[in-house]
Length: 423
Image 1 (tube, helix red, strand yellow):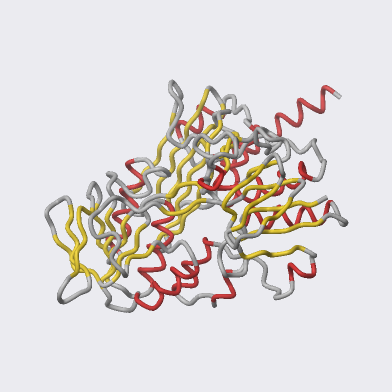
Image 2: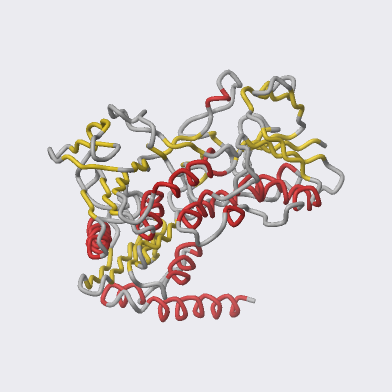
């Protein structure tokens, strides 16, 4: 059996290692299009501020790890998939056959259509090459402009601020982390960043970038303001890497559509990670969840199905994000924005940067947002994933949402007691 994995990120690496464990005799190959050892993009900010060396970004630290696992690493780019011939076309001109194929090509940054975005010195902090270039330029006192304050943007923000640079953030939405935080929490994160010396402009767009005189860039904002910049980092969104599949006949919507066995509409081709459109636990619908926990879960499940373990069913990923912004921990889970007709509970302490918001569907917790409160993270996830019926504890949480641990223990113990009576 010849297993081929396209993509050398967390999803692809976990899949390849799982395949090797499940099938000692199979051929396992990872095809990655960067001239690097497989690494984690989430580690790049730590590399920027020299908390880790470049090798610290590598997903597996041993130099011979993949050779010892008998996993072949091919540094090339796949340009086409021939399903009839079960063959891949490589950018180098060669071909590669497969029996089972996993597409874990992830996503790539999308540059906004702004005049001047093609000028040298503008980076996305998406690759190790980007990381090296940014690390050389993000010096103490350097004027740095960060475009975008979403989840990825705020991870980069942390590193740029720690570099000692004079940092300005421009976000077109009316709050920071708009796809993770509601208006209250997003603007509390903004206030926190401003209190730590970061200039933050929300409801603002960059409208043009030109060469400057005293500094490399002159940046025009939609507010009419002009900014000088020595370095510009763009974090304005990503798009799944699916272009090489044109003409392959695979179903592509937001990403590559997969069933609960991680299969595409071709039973010998699977997809995982940021490129895959899989089941959302909270809604039951399909979506792309571009977060690393989902990517690794996808990779393992896909590998088990590729190896013939068809009982490995994807029950849906819980949308979960945890973010550290200059020491302020924020998190969101499931349907954090709420469900139509559902109840909610909210606790706000702006002075201490504490916030907790719970969202209910009937007496079940379906979503939550927290800021500056880390003690409830595990309980929140557990209640959402188990769809625990809270009963009378829902009303108590509506009065005091901090009583989550009590609600969890009381509700789960009651479920266990009732189950024992039925035995």
